[in-house]
Length: 618
Image (cartoon, rainbow, N blue to C red):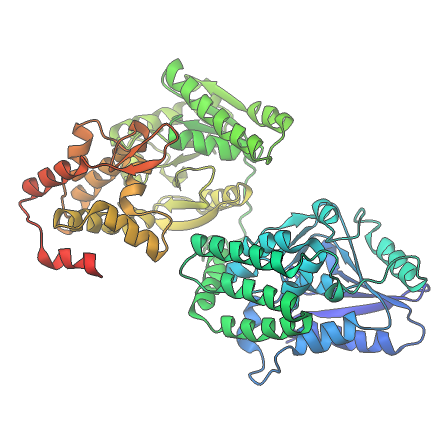
């Protein structure tokens, strides 16, 4: 069965409009490419066709190469058969101009295809970018060569190495597109532009041969050297960012044709790498998380959530409230007293202000978002809420009381969600008659930044509630994973042994800072001890308590955290934990930490183990 196609219609003006059609994102499957090649062969051979416009069906230009087709490419495929033989030698070097009409998305191969055209017209909101590095590969259809020639070397490096997308209006400002128009006028505008190229009223640019945006070779070397340093700092253990830089440089130094061939050969090598295979697996796995057998395939429609309530304005509660109002939900934030409520609202304001400073929100946007927030000290405004998310401390009795209170004030369809990271939901809902609408909504700190949302369901949780939360996750741009109910759920069930192992190794002789350094060199953003400081020891101790109760035979009971807490060292928030912190929250080693570790070893009855100490030499 064919996976997508292209169609060609020739207007009375002599412009052939080739439309990519491969729902949902008009991906470039092998069938689409073959169909496009046939269309171009016909368009270039017909005397009644003066020019070509390339566009996508149903408001989407092209979402790039079909990732699922990587394993189906012909094994004896000639390197550069697509990027050189077809796109460069036939499309770009044709005697008839092509203009890309871009709406919706032009990502990866989609943007590369548009850059082969002799002009690009876009809608203002279209998203353009080359995100291939997220899959462990590089742009493989000429993007490494054409993008620097269109937007300049620094901007091209930024877009490729950071997988950064840009809207149509921004793309026009940097020279990536030639004009911006409305979706209704897009194809007509592209047809007119193409005819003006034929009539020599518009320039006929071949992107691959442009040099006006490229710096001299001495500056190229400096820019590339800096880019390599930055790439190694960000991801020292992967090769594809460096390969991408090498390919870009090859084209500038040795000429675009040599760059295209190096791009083709390097791309084929990267496609076979374990890094790319793993990242592609992750890509598909991430998109499969919202497809739950016997739940999402049962014909249920998500109910509309207009108003949410958050109980607890601490770090987690304020973060959840922030992400909700950023996505235009009305939010009620409840606290126990004015002092805590004021602190919670101030946290939300600070988070929103950080978006203003980064240019991601205007001052007007900030005011509008903040107007969606209402702070309260009682449950009166909970009566018309559609979902309540409890985000108080990990105290089982407190949570039970809250859920019992919610039944008295909320309507019968209101979802009762808890942000608990470890406590059994059946116990939390033990004192209610509403166990079918009790669900876990476990965010990760900081909640308005971290992309994961753990949706925890019990045997009583209704399928409708799960569908509703999956829809909410999508609307607030979170990646949901639906998991069963047990101590620690899925994420902390994996994380707790990792944290325990770190404390075990320190008790037996390994250095805290050496451990963190090795873990970050391995590729993690931070080590377990720096992470514990960031999260705060209160959460860690409460979590550990739940594990000790549920799985006593599986736990190593290090006393190190408890000893630090007893001396008012609770992590970054108190400026002291495993590290010490200055006024800007910069972490430094603490020479006094050794005495706490020694006390922990004595309490555990262990001595430094030579087998552990040898790890320093590895």
